[in-house]
Length: 264
Image 1 (tube, rainbow, N blue to C red):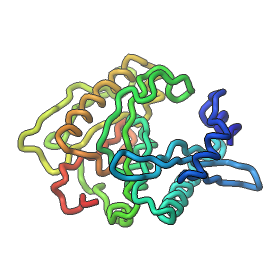
Image 2: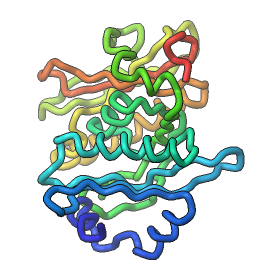
Image 3: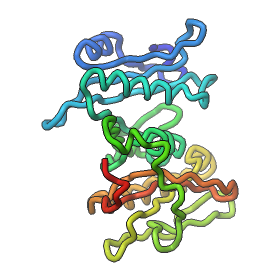
């Protein structure tokens, strides 16, 4: 597992073997995906407690670069869910970068996790290939694995909704480099619709390489938007994936919790 960690994240430091063994013996879980006896993916979780309830804290999920986009990550998460249910857990949590569209789509749309908490600079300065440079802000994903919201995920979605002026939290445009920019953010708590759309770039890594100050601007403005609405009891309920290839933006969908389809 340690060698696969290095390949996936490009870091020399890995989780100590004795730590994973101790975690598994005390309510944690490690699962692996194998191809011809080669470990190509894994997930590592440990037991968590917030003072009120126990849950499974999913710390790492990774797939070898050669085998990504083949459904292995989803397979590992579904197996994690199955094993967690056997162990008596109702909730699995993890953190992810809210600007990484692929992760947002997978966690929120495909799995049915929800987001209610934004953590600024969660891991301080990170030096791996994906995270270096930007503040390590994270969304806390809550995956309520016994809920109807999760069980009916494939058929219960908000993809029929369309982002428009009435439900936007930010207006965006494309600059002379062909990159999306935030022109104006909209923070309001009066006469709002049932759902709000929060834009994020489809490819934040490309923006980091071409225009780092713009990537930082996306970080800070997304932070401001999500913190504002989370503090007013809105939460991320779905992920809207843009189908127009000329629009370099996807969206998180925020819910006020008033809709019948939002019961967890």
